[in-house]
Image (cartoon, rainbow, N blue to C red):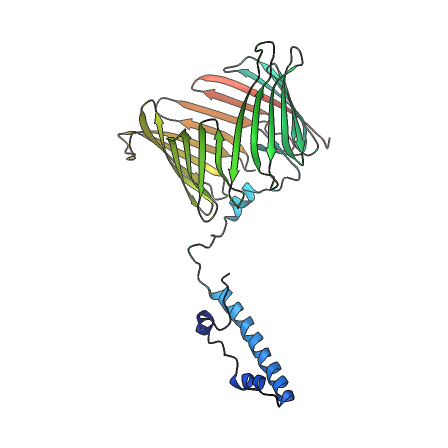
Length: 356
């Protein structure tokens, strides 16, 4: 809300009464103290009532300015900021219920059959992963991961560690990736990634050695530009467009093997706010004509309980389909089938919950 000073031109536009001359004269006089006090009280009341009326009218009738934050899409807000009291965050996904363990088995595809066991604490945080010859432990402080230790299953020794540092606003400011001496390498090495934020706690820069990523935001705090540098050389630029904080289009330029090329994504949504499809275009120029650009379609299908059951990626020479099925009583899928252009694979999951 804008702030106005009593007697300013903006308040005069609302025909606010000036302080009456009779009251000012009474203030300057040494006589008539009773009458002065009565008049001051009377006109103080008028002043207060007029001020309240001004605030009410100004708030109710003021037109939206170009800097006003648009009203958020209620459906999209519900999806993005859903309550996590009975949820578990897993591999970037949100699972229903407080999961204790997940046993995941993969068949076919690009890997042999193997079991991976994920363990969570009562707060829904993943604390351990066993599989692929590794045993990974994660430590937390105030629900923020502060260290990951990666050990070899063969001898139980830690050979890699990741440490996380935060500022007083609980923003991640440093990630230290450490390779420790082990049976393969007799020396240690580390990579440090630093993160920088603006006064709204929005990430504006990420640095790792000579690699830098910079982020720019509009007045509504939506990320509209992302730039990736190697040294001072710009290697990739991404521009995002939104409607009510919902991403609807991305346009990117990337330098690759001596040439620059463009990609564009168009995002389409269902009425309930879930993602329906993405149309992906590639071109050597900004002109995405049918003759000069390749097109890939991504489709998302949901059941009547709003659960994702099918994903498809289709272009002229490639087709990939992923289906999710066998949902348990919490609504989490237990079977995932993938057909990657003819190469088939399957993942089965078994859940154990804290409330069982």
